[in-house]
Amino acid sequence: MPMQGYSVGRDVTLVLQTPTGPLSIPKITNFTRKQDATVERVKRIDGITESLRFFDGWSGSLRAKRNGPDVDRYFAQLEANYYAGLNEIPAQIYETVAEPNGAISQFRYDGVMLTLDNAGDVVGDASIELSLTFTASRRIQVS
Image (cartoon, rainbow, N blue to C red):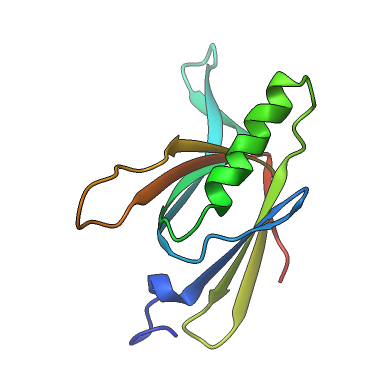
């Protein structure tokens, strides 16, 4: 629920949908996303500079506390599929946001390729934090 008219992290819910079903990551502690674009600067002969923007999808990362083998198993299967010569089918991310005005916004990231950047540091008396990054071909507003 928003606080004093501001969106806060607990207003966001994520679902990672893989070709084999949802990837359960219930202990997400951080989610970042950004729109990627290439900008071309065009210098006209009259001295005026204009900019062209080409959309290049989305990228981001998430961190989560490990609470089971789901993430490790998912990436182990992706790696096995790679070495078996199988095509990787992209995933999707569904993002739901409870807006400060009470509305619900939903976005779908298509063409998602996930990478396990860090499977976590194993340290006594500390939780294990996973780090994943993603690229997506599109982000589409669903509602």
